[in-house]
Every structure is written in C-alpha cells, then in structure tokens.
Image (cartoon, rainbow, N blue to C red; front, top):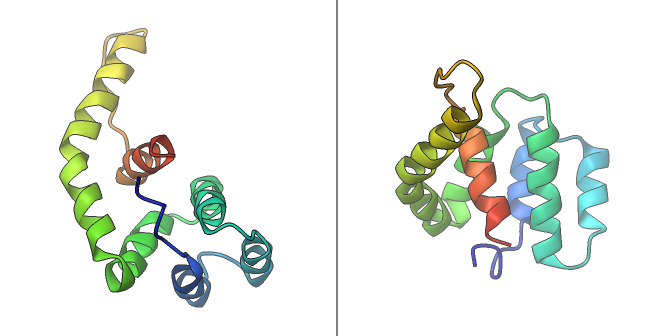
Amino acid sequence: MIANNVTPDSVMDDLLSKKVITSSECDRLRAVQVPRKRCRELLTLLHDSSHPQAFIYLRLALLDEYPWIVDEIDQQIPSLTSQLQQLQLNHSNDGKLSHYPYSTVVFADLRNRR
C-alpha cells in the first residue's frame, strides 16, 4: 500500500510554498493525527482544487522525499489510462473516446490503493 509509510508534512509545506494549498488548508490537514488519513485528505483536497497544476506540483514534491512513489505511479500510468479510456468508451453515448488528464489517472490510482 502506497500510503503506509508516508508522512505528507514536507509535501504539504512544498505545496503551501507554491500556493497550491492555503495556510488554513495546511493547518486543517496537520490537525489530522493519522498520517495515512492525512495523505488521503491531501489527495482529496488536491482533487477538489481548482489549481490547474496541483498534481504536477504534488509529483515534484514527492520526487524529493518519496521518489519510489513517483516511480510506482509512472509504471502504472499506461495501464490506468487504458482502463479509464475503456470505461469512458463503455459509458459514452456517442461512442467517442474521451481522454482523462494525468491528474485524474494518478488520483484514481492513489485513491484505490487505500
């Protein structure tokens, strides 16, 4: 499981310095005592964020302290993209294929690893 050994505090600090999250959001996240739950809350916050590069900044922050997470995500991207595209095609009214952004693929993968 990806989030078992991750404490997101330094990642949150980096995201705060890049103005991806606010200080009040950072304080709210720090109030979550269990690191795994804090990771989940951070991912949810980023997914709900209107910041256009939230997951790009997350990836950059993870590279510093948790490069193995980025490696694991990168290895899963082609498979996840294919699965999500197939789901979209199956549920599409007109049969056209819609593409998902990288952040949606990463978020779907990380959320499913709980």
